[in-house]
Structure formats: structure tokens, C-alpha cells
Length: 277
Image (cartoon, rainbow, N blue to C red; front, side):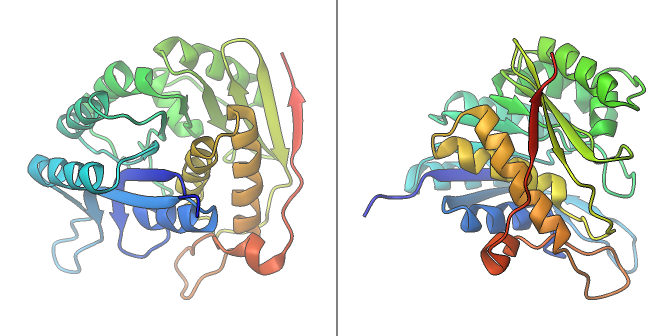
């Protein structure tokens, strides 16, 4: 039997199961890669103190990485919420000594409801140390704006210029996700030479928790399976768009995307791909 590709997610643990490493591992399983995790923080609101993010120690992060690297090894890495400059520096050091061929950086900086998930003093460290290591970075509109010093991004043309400008930070590819704009859901990829747009119908739902995590995890899975970056983005967008369409909620709280949607329904969304410059 041919062994599956190995992908590790370095991210926060979302207690509700919809985002973070939980969403990543569900995505890896659906896409037939072997998933592992390094938990950087536990996200869950304490009923009395109200504290929502519970960071793990540097020692715990190093121990998790060392264990999976020794026991399994890795072909690809998806990076999500790191929260502090100390964690960013640690992860950059660990990856620098690893044999991972594919690194996807999802610069998790702003939560679904607008909460900040990365310390202010960590943004520059992310840009300087982790972004240049990435085969692709996948910021959404608020994250791309922060990385560009607060620039307003309100159109596809603005996303295109943002992708081009963010490429100067050193990543091999930049995918700016336009899910928070109006109209069709358009994402823009810049590979250093051309800009490609990926367009899907906008799904009328609020149940999109974990969509960004799922998208970047799917890109990492496809890259480790040997696809090109453009093909990985295309297939990942098809995967996450279908997952969003079949999203649900058990309570009045915003619910998750459904990672098994393509497998269960047998249908995947069509995505329009177009070179736009």
C-alpha cells in the first residue's frame, strides 16, 4: 500500500470543533492525507473569567513538534493561529530545521466576529520570519489589510493589487480571499508572474465557522499530494465552497462548514478560473 502524504497543522485548538486544528484534521482526513497537529493555544471561553484564548507554553509546542517529526515525519505544513511573537519565532526555527517541502501560512489575525487573534507586536515578526518561508500565504480581506498597514480593500481590483504587493514579503504565492466582499466569492492568486481569479457563487448562509482554516488546510493537502499551486487552490476552493453550502448549526450560534459535504452529496461546486493580469 502506498502511504499517504503527511501534513501537520500548527494552529489553535477550537473547542467547538468548527475551526483551527479540528477543521484542519477533518479536511486532511477527507482529502486522504495523514494529519498531525501542534496545538499553539486552546480557544474556549471560560464561563466565569471570560478568557477566550489559552496559549500553550513554548516547551509544549516544541515537544509536540519533536514527537510528530520523530515518529512520523512531514511532507507539508499548514500554519494557523500562532498568537504571539514568541510562538512565531519558535515555529520559524522548528520549520527551518525540518524537511517539510510545502508550507502554507494562513495568517490568522482576525476572528470571524472581528476579534484580534494575533498580538500587535507579532505582525512584523510574522512578515519577517514566517511569510518568506511559505509556498503560499492565504490572508482574508482584514488580514491582507493589516499586513499592508491598514489599506482598504473593497473590490476585486484592490485584491489583485494587494496580492501583488504582499508577494514582495517573500512568499512564493499569495492568495487573497475575497469572501468578505459583496457579490460572487472571488479569490485572487498571484504567483509572481500572473494574477488568477477563482470565482464561486456566494452561498447565503451564516454557518461559515472554520471556512478559512478549511480552505488553507485543503490547499496544504493538495500540495503535498503533488498538485500545482493553481490546481491546489482550485480544488481547495471547490472543497470549501461545497462545505459552506452544506454548513449547519446545532444552536443559535454560528455553525461549522460540513467537511464531508462532497463525499456525502457526490456533488462539488464548479469554480470559474480566469487569468486577470
